[in-house]
Structures are given as C-alpha cells and as structure tokens.
Length: 91
Image 1 (cartoon, rainbow, N blue to C red):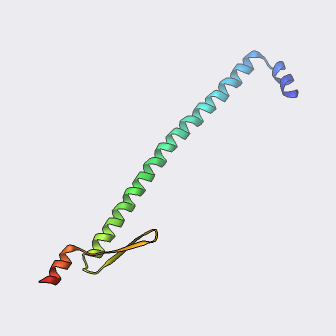
Image 2 (image 1 turned 180 degrees about the vertical axis):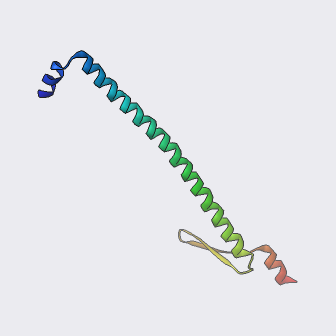
Image 3 (image 1 turned 90 degrees about the horizontal axis):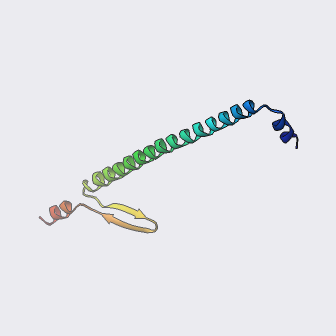
C-alpha cells in the first residue's frame, strides 16, 4: 500500500517521465538482446564451419597416407582408406 500512496502523491508529469524512462530502458534492452543474438548465431556458424573444415582436413590427410583411418560414431567404428591406395597394392 505504501507504493500506491507514493504514486498518488507524485505529480502527473513525474509519472509520465518515469514511465518514459522505464519504456526507453526496456526498448534499449530489447534491442541489445536482439543484436547479441545475431552476433552469437554468427559466431556459432563460424565455429561449426571451422570444425567441419578441420575434421574434413584430418580425414583427407589421414587416408592419403595409405593407412586405415578408424572413424567412430556412437559405438560403431569403420576403417576408411583411400581407393587409390587399394589400387596401388594390386599393381
């Protein structure tokens, strides 16, 4: 009830100014949140692309050495080897 009493005693102009300040702060926060989400999404995409590129480079480098490269996902493992290496062994 004390808050209601304080609000009633405030002048109308003070109430309008207070409401405008609160709204301005709320809008500013919403803009900051929106901009930060875009930035975070962009950085996540960059990190994903970098990880994808790094993994692919590691696979290509590994199989080009003509040795089986074990790839594991969950509890399944396969051995990957370049077909060129298999063809070299036949000749």
